[in-house]
Length: 342
Image (tube, rainbow, N blue to C red):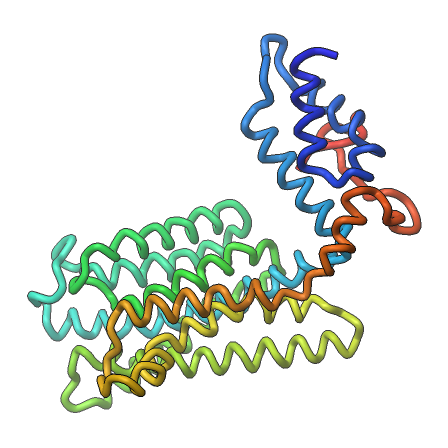
């Protein structure tokens, strides 16, 4: 056995369940070796990532959580609809403010027609538009870019949207990365949500007399974001209940994946309610909101319906019988091969 073969075998043993490694380890290692170059001495980084992803998939399958992937995709779709509605609302409000106050000390300009806040929301609207026309890698790249823009503006302090809006928007964006490929009518829902939210807010602003710039961020704290949280929670609960009635458990994973974003959408009023017992302040301190945000983020993993440790240990050591029929299908990278890494 060569050093390269030994390294690939070690990686397969690390990442895959023991029973799966014993049954398919030689085949997997052989496929990787066929794809290596003549002078290669170590596994490529892409191959290591491939093996890690494939091993995670088999661990999930061995644990009986086969509905995890579909559940996350459904959660990603719901998260994208929600973040699109928030971005559409904010973009219209910021555009109206820019038209009303083209030069304002609270909003530094990147150029004569763009402000920092509008750039953030435009990035999210671009992401949902790309998801409609080019799902998959292009959509994930634009979602990642929107996440990067959101994180990049955080150091700007007073010159960006408040953190109680940016944090839940970023959490929704992380979940939205799992949306994957859907039918075009499903992919159109985020764009329609953004358009409907923008139209509604536009009608409100046109009727407002006078229009004051801080309206959106005041309303978002205690009305818009909590309302979005309630709508998202009810939708996830209805889906989970309806799917569970048919024996489909993916709705449970959907609800679990959305718990943290739902909680973060209520971050401002929830923190204010908690801290009002000790300090009568309408706007909680960022440190208090940070503590509540961490607590909200940690609750969903602790409530995960993952099988008990004993079941996972038995599966890892091969003491659990594999699924009845044929072994899992492993699609080919080339027609003449029997296994293709993820």
